[in-house]
Amino acid sequence: MELAWRARRRKALVTWPDAVDERLDLLVAAGLAAGESVNRSHLLAALVLNADLSPEVVTDILRAYRTMSADELETANRAAAEQWPKARRTGPRRGTGRISRSAGRAATAHGGSAANNEPS
Picture (spheres, rainbow, N blue to C red):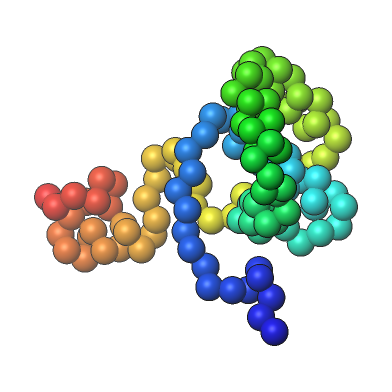
C-alpha cells in the first residue's frame, strides 16, 4: 500500500497575501513545537486532504477569508508568533537578489557575468 504523502508529486503555484504566507509559517512552527517533522508542502497537503468537501463548509471558509481584514489577520499572526519559535524555511530564499552558485558558475563558464547572469 502506497501512502498518500509518498505518492506522485505535483507542483502548484499559489499566490496569496504576505500575511497568509506568514500564517503558513506559523502553522509549520506549531507543528514543529508539537514535535512533528513538518514542512510547508506537507502541511498544505495535510490541510487539503483533511478539508471538509461539503459545499456549505467550503462556502463558509471562503466567506471568512474574503471578509477578514488585513489588520485582523496580522493581529492574529502576531499573537500566534509569540507562542512558537520561528519556522526556518528550506530551499531558495525569495527576494534576496542573489543568484545560486550553479547559476553563477554557468554564467561565468559561458563568458557572462555571475552578478547578472547575462552574457557580457
